[in-house]
Amino acid sequence: MEHLDKYEVTTLAYDVPFPNNYTIPFHILEYGKGCYIWDKSGKAFLDFGSGIAVNALGYGREDLAETASEQMKKLIHVSNLYTTEPTLELGFKLTSSGNFDAVHFGNSGSEANEAALKYARLYSQRTKGEGKHKILAFKNAFHGRTMGALSCTPTEKYQAPFAPLMPGVEFCEYNNEAELENMLTEDFAAVIVEPVQGEGGLDVMKAGFAKKLNNLCKKLDVILIADEVQTGIGRSGFPYASSVVGLEPDIITLSKPLAGGLPLSATLIPEKVNKLIHPGEHGTTFGGGPVTCAVANKVLDIIFTPTFLTDVQKKGEYIGVKLQELVDKHPAAKQVKGLGLLRGLEVGTADEEGTKLAGKIIEEAKENGLLLLRSGKNILRIAPPLVITEKEIDKGIEIINVILEAL
Ligand code: PMP
View (tube, rainbow, N blue to C red):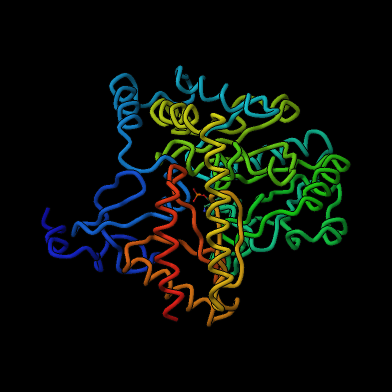
């Protein structure tokens, strides 16, 4: 294609047909195998990012490709006027993964959260009456870019150009029990919270805070939504990170790794909410299609087994120890954050200098064949495919070690 000629001799795309939301140049990637990705020039990268915590089973999965291909030959799409066996199977797998009565399928994390917010409001309106519609979210949270989810994502840069947002959302400091107690009243329909703040700095929810959230939400009949879009489906070493931190949510939202890299989301809802919903009150065209659900069934069959999850727990502990060694050795490495295979290494200070330092490390890591993510300002985020080996962890940590050594 004529437009693609200009990319022939480079792995970097400067002239792209995408909105100016993204950092230019784009790096053109070509294929992957296991925890490695190759770019157009044939250079290999060890992936500590999984396409932002998505590719849980790694790259080049023949089993997932075959499942998708077999299903595509039968039916690709039916709409939610009908259903298919892969969708039913996935629905039952997810409802039986906790105390849930139904699953609302969608296509992205934002959509999963939109559904959660809508169902919580519906519940509140039908049980408490009009006007109890407020939503409590948290500072440094990330719930998505659509208007409802964005309204619960208090980052100035993301929100400001799109005002006015959804009214009635208030923000509490994460892990601050006293502030939570002061703010939450029965005027709220829902609390939406991440067990680990994936984008906002990898703070992990404290046990006392989880307990306070559980108790207050029960007492005030406020729907407790756990956004597990980033933490869910095994990344913590358990199906859901809520269970690790002691959170007892009414609703769980899932997406990123659910269909092994295909777009799918799930909003798991309890009976008390489901029984109040009437036909046509919410819906989706693509959500829960047979291809994504067939692949998700395969993904869950692999991840939701004790041996797989125990292995993730072990590797999570291992990477925690390795990161702590970096903190003990290098003055620029401040602390280890996160849990399981969603980890952070805080570098420098939470200001412009720390932001630059994290950017420099991420850039140099890439030059040395390691893909890293950022969380917050100055935290290197590590969210590798869950199938990573200890040897691969060692290799990536050594790349970071050499960069920190040379600072
Ligand atoms: N919630 C959380 C916790 C996330 O990390 C993200 C994406 N980073 C989202 C929601 C939004 O997901 P999506 O980009 O698929 O809409």
